[in-house]
Length: 334
Image 1: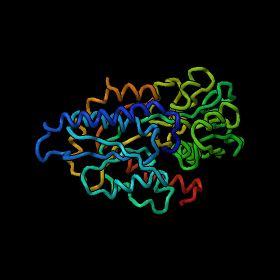
Image 2 (image 1 turned 180 degrees about the horizontal axis):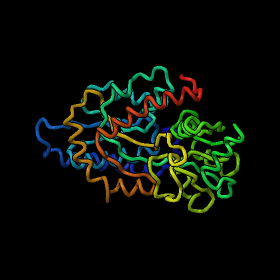
Image 3 (image 1 turned 30 degrees about the vertical axis):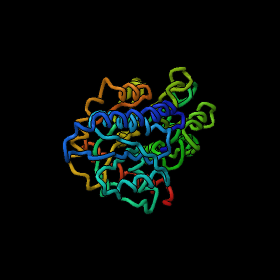
Image 4 (image 1 turned 60 degrees about the vertical axis):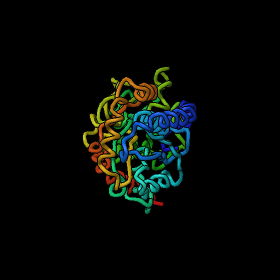
């Protein structure tokens, strides 16, 4: 399961069984229509580099179903976890069969900052196809927190170095680095309190064990709607419709790099450009009014599907950013 994501994303379990059956059936029915020599020529594997049942599975399996129905071949999601995602990502980077893809999280841009040799270079060994979905990272506090807004939160952190704490789902996760980025850009000494997963991190804020937390909406939307938690700010580049009154961190800290938890589709570096073009044509209907957009809206996420250039630009920005922030935070590389 990817860093910072809960194991509670169980709606994908039914999709796992039904999706594999429907994808195979649709492919069998449509296969005669596929042109000779056209891609795909056989079953396509979409490797998810985390354990089954996580949030990364949901868009992967919905898109696999959709592509199987429209391209005349089976698209099979294969979970290959290990080493924080490096095992599955490495398998795709080394693939030469032309029918292996990767669906992963923003962890792909973070791993080089955490591992001395993950076995791949994300900028050289992977071919960006598209961002699939993205979820804001929220800075949250208890409803009765003494911090009415982000400015008061930062002011207290400056007055009392190391006394204002934030929880995360673990060291080196995207949400942890969102907090470290705030420490670096705002010049404040926040205390990081890591937990083993997103649910314990949210619970820590609710229980008052941590003053704040960096979390995705998946864990905190019910608590926000019930009035138990408040959103102080979002780490994204723009405000979120989930809490439109909450500013972006950049509004208070102008040099903060807007970031979010994102998911994306890659191929190996030798993937022909026409394959990416085929995939983008077929995925376009999922952008709105689809099973994917509806499911992501339930989880507080947006569907992007904006093509290879946007994903490549994000990788070029984030890979060096996270190396710098991890070094500054003193996170040891394994």
